[in-house]
Length: 403
Image (cartoon, rainbow, N blue to C red; front, side, top):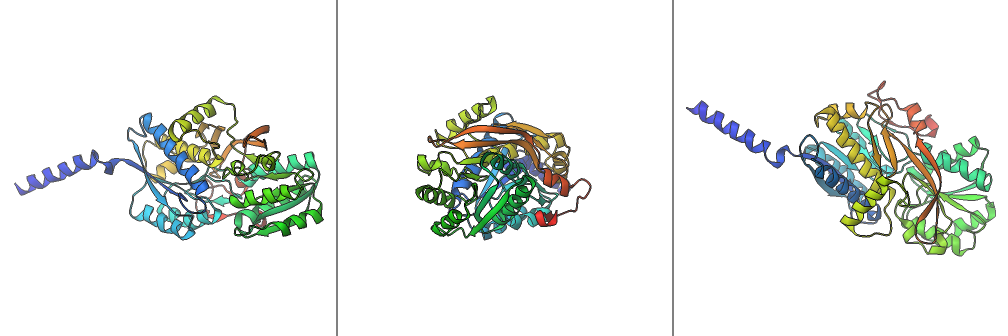
């Protein structure tokens, strides 16, 4: 009798958990929803939630609705490692979508590697991250900076001045700009690396005036980008010294600039709202219906949207949410998704995505006019140095000095 009762209890528990949220597919989102970086984090979490809503409306994955567990880092780097450990040790997630800065990514990668948890990083970055568990849907320097520098040298001339933040993204990106300048007949005539706390750009502007470049590559982040461009324009330099950037628009800086300061700024990215495609029109309609009419949607909102859909496709392909099986599906080489920015394909070896890259010019209506498209741009550098099929234990951040 006792055995019978125990069996009945066990069966009841199985039925209970099978029909409860315990059986639900769960993903984690670790973003800067509050704090100084929330202009990026809000776009990221909105893109993720919209993607989950879209997938759930179509039946979810494997017949289960997706639940999102959200963590707000409050723009503090130490909270990334704290929440990454919480996601792994407490919350039993099927995948994680997290990070803005390169430092946040590098802090979390070892944690997800040890847990063998699929991790999606969906931000523009300097490139070179190579890890079995990490998948990148944002663009790299070899996708963005290479065509931008080649185009700008041909358009404006060979002399380049670099203005960038003094951390991984800025310093490594500058190394790539130097590399591409040599490749395309350019010359870097000056560099300035500034702390994120700098607000007075007069010394930098004076250095630029003395260097007399044909164009400036400006890579400040968020509010720093706005401050620099406004002060640069006020000094009367913008008309004769064009500004190009691979990260301008990532925080929707164009809506914070005065129309005259924003007009003519050249940006390179994988998404702009002005893209005239059926997929983008449908995405904009869905976004506006949920969040209201907004002035701008950042590229990061779209690269996160794409990441969630690629993960969902991998789960369906694997037939399970098991981490190892999903990683194998992501490495199949035929996993792709048509997002608002066009076709996005996950590369098997490098875990980076092929996707369209666009060069656009800022207009005086807080938007961009697309002037050139580079279709199906490949992460060439990452494909050269990072083959996780041949070397599954490889875990390294490659930079120009290690190529």
